[in-house]
Length: 387
Image 1 (tube, rainbow, N blue to C red):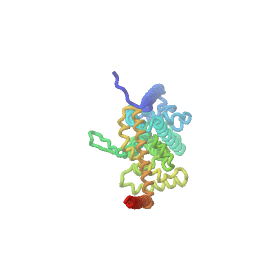
Image 2: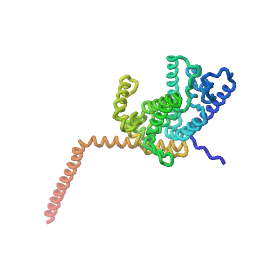
Image 3: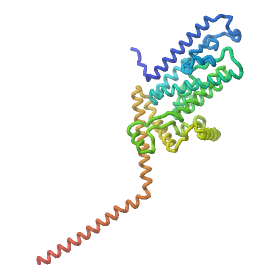
Image 4: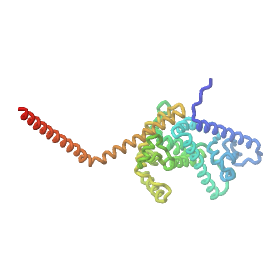
């Protein structure tokens, strides 16, 4: 009996699409390579072994982005992000989608995971396509431009999402000889591609990973709408102070400087604050309110406590139930803090309110004493009459 593959539906479909498009790309490149006239092979490849998988000469412009040839094929902004050229990169990308995608889909839900994946794949490819097209216009056309393809932006986006969910989680490599926190993965991944790109001649990986890192952080930081969910969330919404939905993630642990080591924060923090203030002044971004920052910090704290149950869940429904429970707990915690704050704000008037019952109590005691005295007098009068 074959083992059951436990993957959420969208992650399973994503893995299959990556395998199918990569196989199709390899087949088409091989046919193009075999059918080419040897005299048409560019001279720059005559002095070295020309590979039908790595040479840009055999790129398929209607499957991957080849600036500016792919202008006629706009769907390549999506398909190019799901195509790998060699078996090594395909194995790495498949493993990243397999193990990371299922956690994110269970944490975000399939609909939100689909939007995030679409944003992180299309936008970096579009930015990279515009960059290379503009460069070609400046320096002149190239006979065989380097195609834009690969899962680099999606891998960077997945690492940024994991940093948002479990920043302090530690990953052990090589039998625990290397231990790295999840919050350091996005910066290390981007830095590795920035260094290796020019050295290995894969400059597209440099830009794709950098754009994937930036676009995924911008989306999660400022635009993704998350719901508190549950009846508690609805109760908070009616209070008028804490919304049932939160736009973006204003938590301190997800600020841009939080991706880098602590010793560079004094240098990066003023720069990031200046850029943020300029974007807010230009009305590109809406500034975070103090309530949004507080809600973001509370949500980050709740995620650190609730995500392990999501990550170890064996079914998509169980992950959604765990996420719903986490959101209800977050909403109840926020409601409890609101009630505590309201009680403390009434502390100044509490002595006056407390005095009233005391005065009323004293009045009851006086009335009781008076009634006792009257009873004694009546009793004495009765005894005298009988005598």
